[in-house]
Image (cartoon, rainbow, N blue to C red; front, top):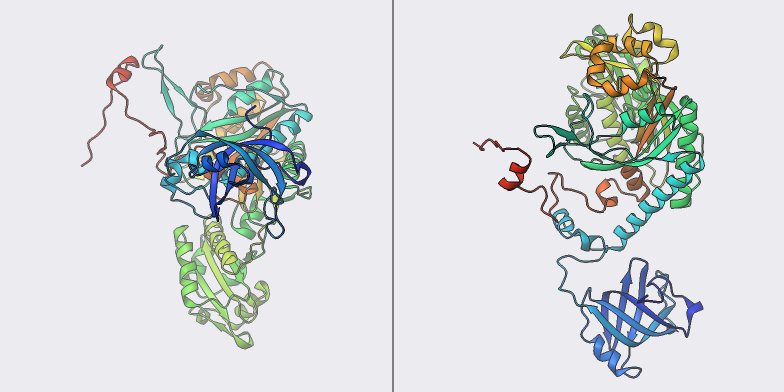
Amino acid sequence: MMRTHTCGELTKKDLKKEVTLCGWVDTRRDHGGVLFIDLRDRYGKTQIVFDPKHSQDAHKGAEQLGREYVVRVNGIVRERPEGMVNKGLATGEIELIVNHVDILNPADTPPLEIDDRYLASEEMRLTYRYLDLRRPTMQKHLMMRHTAAQTAREYLSSQNFCEIETPMFVKTTPGGARVFKVPSRVHPGKFFALPESPQMYKQLLMVSGMDRYFQLARCLRDEDLRADRQVEFTQIDLEMSYIGEEDIYLLIEGLLKSVWKRVLHIDIPTPFRRITFHEAMMKFGSDKPDLRFGLEFVDVTKIAGKADFSVFKSAVDKKGVILCLNAKKSNFTRKDIEDLTEIAKLYKLAGLAWIRVTAGGKLESSIVKYLSEDIQKEIIKASGAEEGDVLFFAAGDFEKTATGLGQVRLEVGRRLKLIKEGEWNFCWVVDFPSYEWDEEKERWQARHHIFTSPKDADIDKLESDPGSVLAKAYDIVLNGVELGGGSIRIHRKDVQARCLQVTGLSYEDAIKKFDFLLRAFQYGAPPHGGIAIGFDRMCALLCGESDIREVIAFPRTKNVENPMDGSPQEWQESMLKELYLKTDIPKKP
């Protein structure tokens, strides 16, 4: 080995030892002819000293050193002088007086600072990602990701799961996300798809008798990007046979408890809270509610619906809802209210009605004139309104209204500084509707996917009332972020046929689209179910980040480009010819 120790390892127990370190020159300071350099590797930093009184040769060599030079130094560990201890550094009590230095590789001046205090632009960071990854924060993130992955593997292995890899070149199936297509050279005119998830294959593994499967699966989706989405990402994917929802809850709570304990040394309490989909939407306006603060909605449909206000009347006539959000002690200005109204409009609401509670419980708003004194009193009582509160109202279709007001709730929470940082608030969202009505196609469609099992008690309502059928589906949510989701699958042909008919498909039609999976089910499929945890999202939360690119080594820009390697690239004619392809790109007007 070229080194005896790392740059984050030496302490007072190593005093007087002769050691060899390797790393990058992080900073350089000249104190009256004595040179001090912080040597850095992924384990930390060590202060090394070049004193001409100790070694003229080493000091002379140090004079050539520049930022990010790769060097090897040999020297003696000594205690730092009194008053020079750096308590913020693991090696802060010692320094290395250098006997000899070797320049392993000189370096050009880096185009960005290798320093957490000076963050470069996104374009620069991704163009020189290999330099950005040298920053301590990024190295810490990747190590935390590694620890989380190892912990997940150890935990699932301890629960009798077998890690199995599924194919990356697959047949595309309808539904789900847009997939990437890969032309086949061997079979001209035919294409593979890259998997958006291992869903079909993990269910086939249950048919094969593997009983408990998992993998840290690479998934690829040709979709527009955002802070929590990349075209290629990783999920902790698993499937089990002979289980029900309770088995999934217990397993995943144990998995997350293990990860948080190993990575952050935090004991998260279990079991997690469970909230039905309807309760989550009705109280928080989201199927991934942030439970770190209150501001729960109040359903005032029966109260406000009696008012002589056209917006409220229309909502009631169309069998919609009127929801109220009480921004307690907010004292919002008119500008604040206008900002929140714009957020509501972004999420397809026509706007927000509002009422300010002033001194003596008097209500101030343009809509108060439409509310009788009795209605005003009922609203104050139902919402718990007091002086200084501002009440926001949204009215209309249940899901659209709840979703829009839910986004307002989040912004109110941020403005009032109600969100408690450092708190881990997990919950399960359960009892999702099995189907939703597609207005354009005028038919029911599966809300999750067509293999999701309905609740046993609701099977008899499949033909008569599909909208009331609940699914054996579940999402795991943390601090308003959906960590993952899954379901118990349909494994019986008769139930599958009935569920398909709800969406306008026959079993025969489905076999044409999902031939190999449904064919496999004919040979004895056990009851089974599973879940997929968004590993990148989980790691981002563990690292205190909101953008998953901060925990991915080589992510892409929002335009799905990699400025570091220049992908995607144009293909030469010879490459296209080999694949029997031609390009026909429309010219921009």
